[in-house]
View 1 (cartoon, helix red, strand yellow):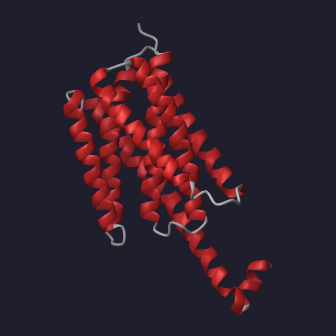
View 2: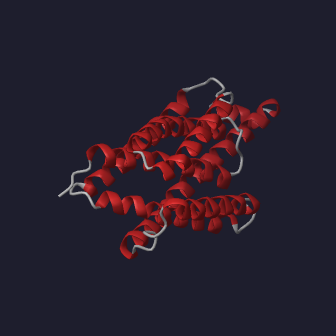
View 3: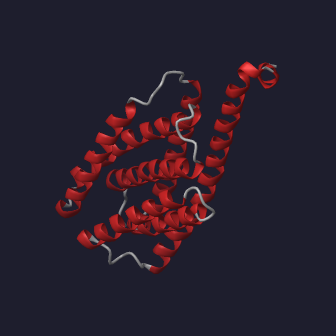
Length: 232
């Protein structure tokens, strides 16, 4: 009833249109996010089956990952308002699947590897649905979280780069726990930006949420592999 009143009331027309636009962006983001998981799974499967990423360890793997990821992100932001935006985003998610395949293959090497992968997937889905539900009931503005989350993400990235060369399991555990907390909060933050009208491009919105989700999954998988991996 309230929506109908806003539609016929000139004073409320702008609010009604704004609500419709926000819902459209959120709906398109969810659809594209679901679609983006298909190339990710395909890339991960190809990587595990062929072992194409097994040689990408240490500094070489870091250079390939950072170069590819930042190159794709730059291209997505450049094409987000054109017809090329979605294919470029899906190409990025395929690349991320390939990059994930090395860790997935390592975890699958454990006796309980498949269970660990499915647990990480289920845990990530649980985190996302919890944050999505929370984003619909929280009324306060969360934009102030952005700078603190960015600092946290930067600290995780620096720590992760250092640990590539140090190779510390304890360090990886700390980084993984931090990543789960920071990127779970980022899911809430990015969803609230869409709901509150702060993000109006569904390709950019999908990219942000995809990065949040993939980081939570990777951190959970690393943590489960370190703590629960059973060797033959």
